[in-house]
Length: 488
Ligand code: ALA
Image (cartoon, rainbow, N blue to C red):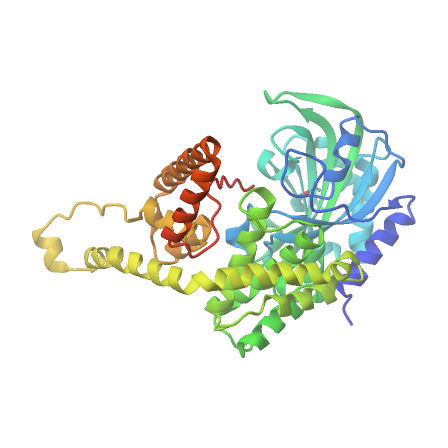
């Protein structure tokens, strides 16, 4: 019997509790830190401690932190391991233990507690971190061939362009040790998955990129719960772990299909739904509401992607509250606030979904027309034609774009987030003229400003005008004119 996701979480926290770590609850997805929109890592709530701005109550802490990152959203469902929502298990030292102890415990919990065979483990260290290299080799006994030195992209971790950072060392699971130590390429995700990152948090980076040592040497770690669950539950990807799969099954059931016998495209849609539903449930539980700015826009965008992927697998009616129910049931033992906020979660989803569904059909039709208008030219040019090649020297294809105005109309009238239009465009080999889109957005902002000034001048007169305007406008979707959406 494999360990469940809930058991893995508890085992991790217990292991570090027994080693004098204070078990703290997950912080909200809405960070205190103003430099990020959402909580992106387990260390975020501790940033002021690392920076020496807050004195910790405990020298050691351990958490399971709910996190959201949207930088990999295109990969969600397409790879085995990318998510928007995920849980990060972490052990932290605030000026207490450092490299040696973090590595020793990292190895102990991986091998002794979770029972991973050392034959299946490979580690990486930062390029010139000879100290970490030596600890792995001499104290832990990892063969040199299985300790890889990597550069800044992989093995120097920072929570953002500025702030606390440091070299790190990562533990990877090797699904195919039989392929040999000579051929270790940690980028190869058919063979490796990185599941535990140990960060030696010892610098602060300022706006000019300079590193200065922090007051203390700290430890920040992150073990991806979904990833370790994939390994321990022996399933082919994170989505098929017990943390997510029941959501996928609920969606498949509503669509009247079976996950395992579905084609790849359908599986991707089911995985996107499985991932995004967890995000939206926890975001609304943490009091985020859908809107056109900031976090609210991230939420709206995620909900709309869920709805659209539902349609792609053949669901025609409303379904998000049903899949949300499964997500709530799955996580309520670890995060009781999802059940407490159940009514709010379902109401928000219901409203957003029905608003979007009202215009989705017409928006999709418009987009289809736009795509069909563009694509025939491309297909003609793409046709392998020996005659053409012999007699003509066709000039390179003009870049085929969906115009900024079309993308803006889809956004403003039909509620298609720009990224959704881009995604559908990409599925058809097209691009969206983003500059043109932004220009249209700017014009809209100016129009709104002008209208606003009128209202300021003569209140009654402009109210009449406003009423006229409302009747005259074919308003189909949500629209907040001065929408300046900034994501990530
Ligand atoms: N803060 C580190 C990470 O997010 C552990 O990978």
